[in-house]
Length: 276
Image: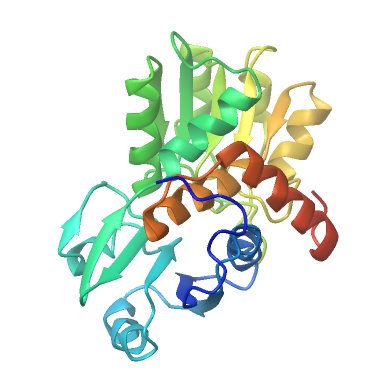
């Protein structure tokens, strides 16, 4: 059943949340509010800083608050899986709570592919390199491969002793059409950042540089890539798309994703302090 604007007025408020660490930068509360406001469905959406290894302590709090579902961001996308009775993803960003049971899903991959498709980037036949080894890397790798791309992933650390690892050699050998940063390097409130961006010169001129980070809107990686003439994408479009797809799961309704994305962008431009 497809939800139409305003049709949900008068229904009980849904309680949702987002967990992660760090979490203060998250735009998730604003995005979900914009979607629910457009639908006319009352929403209570809270943010919870949950340190790595502390999920077991937070889940009883979640149950006491009567939360109907929650979004999951770093560093819990893999750690939440053992707490779910059923899981439909290798890396979880969306959890429903129904009759006391947790079910895990991922909308990251479809949100990511939608953001590329919107920009006219056809994945089939392309080569991608993803910097990162976490759950989201596995999720995006699988999505890209299923869509017909060849994918390579590589570990990268923002420390002087190992800033790039095997990345420069990999880029030189595969000449990727798409480079994706799936690490927290450059994220607001993250203590680590890129120490050396010379590897970008190893990308072919037609490559797209995609940073999953959306805060700050232009990371040091994207800023340097733009200076070098590459097309760049930050993580905001993916964030919005995956959030709307999560709401489809929470609400058990099909939503008009393109229209709601425009609604969310207008909302963020009006009410957010972020530069979009």
